[in-house]
Amino acid sequence: MNGLEILGTGSYVPDFEADNDKFSEILDTSDEWIYPRTGIKRRHLAVDKPNHFMASEAAKKAVEDAGIDPKDIDLIIVSTCTPEFFYPAMSCLVQKRIGAVNAACFDVNAACTGFITALDIAQKYLAADKYKTVMIVSSEKLSNQQDYTDRASCILFGDAAGAVVLRGSDKPFYSFLGAEGDEFDALYCKIHYEHNCPFYEDQDAFYNGRFDTFAKQNYLWQDGKAVYKFAVNAMHNAVLNVAAQGGYDVSDLDIIIPHQANMRIIGKATELLGIPPEKVYTNIEYMGNVSSACIPVGIDELNHAGRLKTGMKLCVVGFGAGLTYGAAIMEL
Ligand code: COA
Image (cartoon, rainbow, N blue to C red; front, side):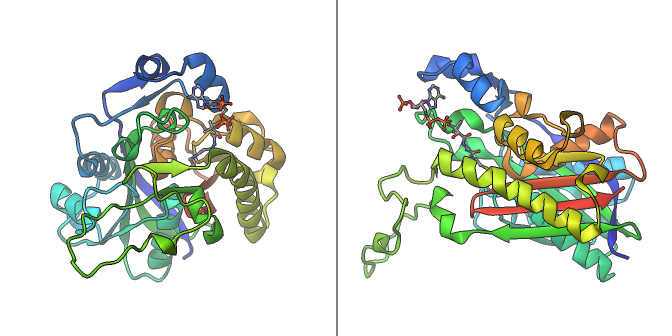
């Protein structure tokens, strides 16, 4: 039993919307600059709710959609790179809020590749029959980490959560994960500790390359061009890898949900793969980049639009800080 069955899906998108014009009120930018270069018109920001609230709301909806008792969930994996706590894991807060009292809980952080990483882990537990029902919740509050004076970054990101409830199945499933740690400093958010250990000495000498010790503390920093270049190749290679594992031709895929970082990255990678635009699902125009939540929010949208049909081959592919990348193909 190698496959996955999606029992239910859910998502939470904050009410507050910031369109490109709202950003031109606070920055020297415009819709004319942002939209053609990114494909983003607006994004939702969790201005009055913490990340774990978004995660729990998405989880509740997925449980309801699956028609299961939360007590039947054996494992909750939360993917997030924007938690409010170093510990406990956010999955423990979700467990409490939804009453999944029998679930084991842990979080994964593979940045925007987090959902695909969690899917890869979930599949292994289910295939081994260790757990019967696994929930993945990908929840991201990127607004926590933006420098809203950095016009080349903050305009890209939004906040949202997506969740899926999974069981094992006999249908095919293939996955691939990769990382290029050499490029760790192309996209990072360094934790700033308020050290009070009197014996500490300066440790910034341990960083080099593009790492900027003067970057604002606790904020996202990126080399946009380097990430862009990496992303196109990474998505292309990841899809070819999973397709080859299953003996599929790329044209066999029915629908592909790519990570929603930039419409031009999506367009270029899928063009190189020869995947026509009608098979490529995007929500970047109204969501922006919501990191690991992009893909499960997309799955939930497709599910509730009645577009996920039995027998379809669904491909998910993404990349993110790390730099990490990965893809999965599941037959529904
Ligand atoms: N509005 C107006 N001008 C802007 C701007 C904005 N929001 N952002 C950048 N600019 C300006 C720059 O200041 C620069 O001006 P200059 O030439 O006078 O110095 C000019 O536009 C070009 O900037 P550049 O950074 O070279 O733009 P770009 O074409 O590389 O586009 C990104 C920037 C961020 C949109 C693009 O690099 C990108 O999408 N990269 C991938 C990032 C990503 O996806 N990160 C998350 C991965 S999970």
